[in-house]
Image (cartoon, rainbow, N blue to C red; front, side):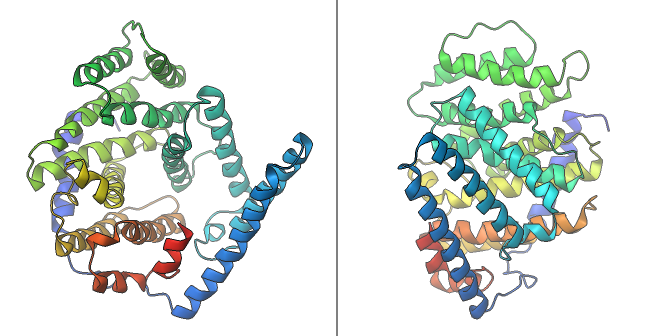
Length: 387
């Protein structure tokens, strides 16, 4: 279909918002409980593989260069074996061995490219970038896309630690941020730009990665999407001011939805109207999942999200219930080319919510935490120790 950003904003955003507002706030009945015996079995398994990996890492620093190469290969084989046998996430039940090997190599290539492009990037920044690339991989598999390292999506994923962290940083003045965003906007519009710092040069290099894969005179859709994402990032800066819940929701849909829609665009498959509703909704879910993890930080920095705007336990619990119902609704109404993988995503998104709550447990009642623990594959105290 032909992209029409005005229609996306006025029609599809409103459909997603309507689905969110209609989602129930009661604890869902469709969640599946996991027995205590199964939890203990899962915990024993996780401890065993954790010990194996820890032993490999502890020995690594004492090895020669040749020894480190062998250890690295052994570590990769250990990861592969875990993916092919573990039953907690169970990715091998929806993805064959060849696909797992291909995607593992794709992620290794991402890490190699990251270290070559920005050796100074801290581990947190790498994690931020690779998480986004994994979202693209998930969408690629969901649509039976062709595996293989995507240089354009690499550029987009690396923009996260380069742009988001710069814009969110309190060390840069509003004027500096405005100049930085204007440079990005000009670059996306095909204008000549003149970077004045290392950070600006690197940002332009990442945008050039996308330009090489999508020549502007052939298809300008990706640049329209990226300009919209830039607009969403700037609007999100308003979350430091007084906003009502409806305005906060609009910002969450805008920023989260466009971010995920760009990931989906990099999958070389046509995007339908049904796709728009699902991926925009999925973007809202991921945005709220981030906000759920960051309740404490957001409240301390006076950053308004649906979770930080009202720190009452009951409000937070109703929001989580609403997230689960919303996710179930948009997934159930979406017909995928890979239905088993779609349900795999749904199941693991539930787990993402439960584990995020453990990181923000002080904002939830003990009673509610106890209820949600039934649905998680390990006990919450064990998860906290694993953190």
